[in-house]
Amino acid sequence: MQALDHDAYLRLSADAKVLEADRYGDKVLRLADGNFLKLFRRKRLLSSALYYPYAQRFADNAKLLQTHDIPCPKVLAVYRVSTLARDVVHYQPLPGETLRQLYLHRSDSADRHLKEQLGAFIATLHDRGIYFRSLHLGNIVLTPDHTLGLIDISDLKGQTTPLGRHKRLRNFRHMLRYTEDRRWLLNDAGQAFWNAYIAASTHPAALALANQLKTL
Image (cartoon, rainbow, N blue to C red; front, side, top):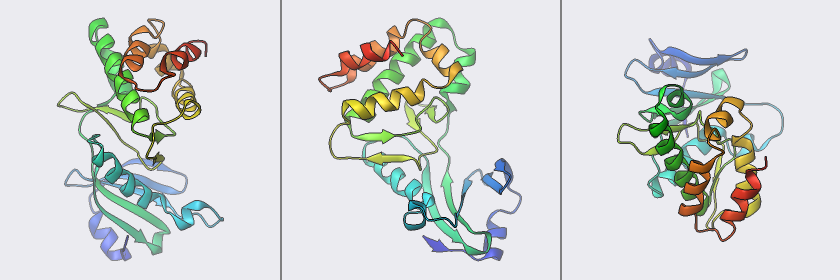
């Protein structure tokens, strides 16, 4: 993580477009060159973010995903801007559209293929020990070369063994919390998605897990 003074930050963010903000200020900027800045507010209260900042987690998680050949943003730099009390990730965005953007205007046949691709993709994440706690269809991207990748990756952890049943179940429960996502994903009783997950997963309890999730 590099220190970035206020003037250097202003030069870097000159002519940027604010894509996301909250009551505390800017959160995501698109720079004039098409790259992004993601800003993380440094909280004063005691938390793990003081010792392992979210900006650094984002960068480390990008490296982790790259080792598994999973498309994700390409990190250019990580900064600490003390005058703003912000940590900042400077990155190239992952090209493509989120699944949440896509499912609004796809045919039934394209829908089925995308659900099958998603089921296999999540099985791959789980089997490779990647636990993306806030996984949902707004942070999974279909890239121009028709592969799936991940964005907004600060809330992600890796382990050396496949995820166990409990983490898989918790991951799916989070993803199915979103009403419109759930409706699209399960409008065929989840057949395309769950069958693809079961077929792609090496977890011995994948079938039982999928059957349990069908009751959620």
